[in-house]
Image (cartoon, rainbow, N blue to C red; front, side):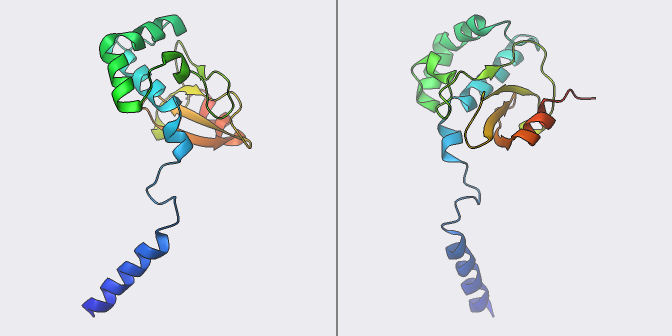
Length: 148
């Protein structure tokens, strides 16, 4: 009986080995600058009494602070701050929300940035928790709707 359970468990692992979606994040999503951008946006807000950066210049200045620049390099392999603001998929600047954020994005948190177009009708959207999700146009509209 125990042997049969082990074989069944092994069979499930082998069957799912090539699935790619079980517990494995989308590679393009993980390699994009959107995740670190969202994480540091959330950190900025936390360090500034809940206030988001007023504009891109202020946010970039924050990212260029030595401790932040070092972490971007060491953790996310980004040395060019400007590159974080450009989607590697649609080659356009991310839309970053400077000011009050609303809606319910990835991880149930407010949306702070997203791809202008994305690819194949889907775009990456990031929340202030650093969560990134690839969504279609319908889901994007739902995320961007103001919270009641």
